[in-house]
Amino acid sequence: MTTTVKSRNPTTPARMVKNWQSPVAEGPKTDEERQLLLTAAATACHPCRVNVLLVEDDDAIAEPLMKGLERQGFSVHRESTGLGGVDAFRSSTPVDIVLLDLGLPDIDGYEVCRRVRSDSSIPIIILTARGDEIDRVLGLELGADDYMVKPFGFRELIARINAVTRRSQATGVQTDDIIRLTGGVVIDNRTRRVTINGEELSLTRKEFDLLALLASDPGATQTRETILEQVWDAHWYGPTKTLDVHIASLRKKLGDPTIIETVRGVGFRLRTSIESDTN
Image (cartoon, rainbow, N blue to C red; front, side, top):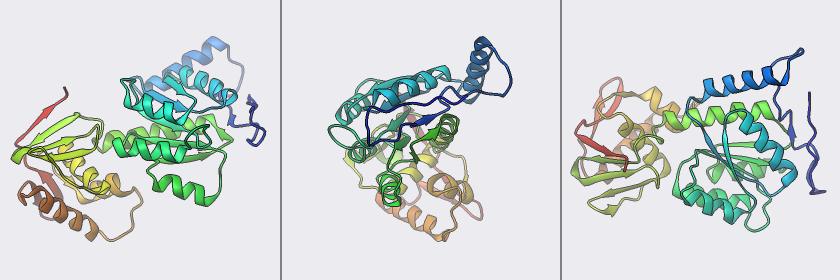
């Protein structure tokens, strides 16, 4: 069954979200059987409830999308303005992933993406009617993890949510909020800041992601292939020398070349004298 979602915005395609009820199989099934199967599938993908921040101003799109996500086991908080979305993200509202429209009534989605990304590496998926290549490139360059053009299939959206949250968890971003290393080095995963004895370091995004990955399991060796896949891209075909350059830069900025150890022929690991704090 395909559900048509009508938009109140005449410039926006009428069918923004296709199959938002996401039938799990063909053939006759009662509503109760469908709900049981959907709940079981959502639980298998996410044993812990995933908190979604939906930033979408169009009620005709947001309401069925929220219902579909909640039926899949997600917890959804919706904001209809860009500033409201930023405030909700920075408040005590639990957020594990952001679904972001671009055409918002106050500030556009690009600015929301930039502000959220400046504070955190939480997954962001842009949902928009803007399908031009320049729009996709701009969204991804500003830090979005994925970009879907309306109308989109609901089941594809769920698959992409699962994919980006798995990648986020794999990089160690959603581990301890605060990690303390030797030499007064403190990593704040929530704000993506690193300090040494209270002074903030200026790290690039890749440098932070690399350090956070190593700190997620101190003492464990991360292979070069794993680092390139999780910090760069699963389909990275560039020179592996770029990893050595980033490691060298990190060692220099941290002021201690021994804090990141080289495991010859394998990869890198962080020294094991480490303390973590989730408070």
